[in-house]
Length: 431
Image (cartoon, rainbow, N blue to C red):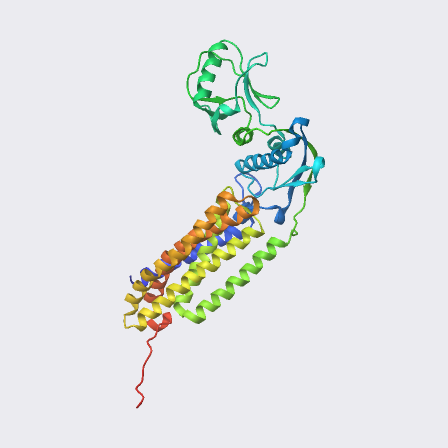
């Protein structure tokens, strides 16, 4: 690769990194399409924030159960927490905190959810019993939620929001019988006590799926699907209290964390350059690109809600990215000291370091996947950010760093010393 080509590629990488950094951290006015000025909001501002960083919404659910359920009340409460957790996770509120407070007959369930824009929607998610039924006008049920195998929100051919239901084998049979008996009549699809759709049955339907129409917005379709998919609560709740809550760590926690992170990165850049010279410059550029790409990922992935544990996951993944570069550079230095040329040392160093980096990172990836699947709330947020960070760090350390190291070597005119490479000179004892 020539110096000119190396310089062009380096300029593109630096320019791309700088543009992304500005778009992610800066908000500024831009000319609108009409009269006046429209404000550009930074990409970083679109990242979801948890309760500890931004606050949210809290609701206390008071259970209503019969005397016959008293014997199994502990199991019923645990089941209710699991169902509510599934409902909120399906709707994207992965950082919600669900706890049982009180003892005995005074027990209640407290739910804290970050970044709530529509409180009524949240109440519809957590307050509904989730009992789905297909009934006639007399209230006779033909099939219920247990006959639903899958459920999700979507759009029909006209672009209107719908909820798609996929039946079990038994549900398909019951739905076919129901549409045969109600041909020419109205079927009422109810969720709890609310009628969510009342289509007219024109003919018998034998397919294994159906759709609920007449829903106003896609968000409402998602809510209905989340409640149906999570299952039915064993007892009903009434909303005892609900209110907004402020950030538990304070509103200045996130800006302070960003400043601290920036200072830490600058220190890392300085240390890498001091110890590895040209390779350290390459690592610093790769780490800067890694940081802006990571922030872009956090903004694009819909289920990310940043919390303090999430920030810890980011810091850990950055540390592993630096560690990967150190492993590579030390391997390159060993190969160069063994007598290889700088070009061969770079190629061999990256190749042999790959196995070590892959082995150390794959265990962390597997651990984060397990935490993501099995753990709720803030631990899930830690797992998501760690998983994204590790995968991205492997790309930047192995691919981007290698490209930048070769670019630095070419721009230096093939001087190994610029990369911090040198061979040890051994002297005889007579000398």
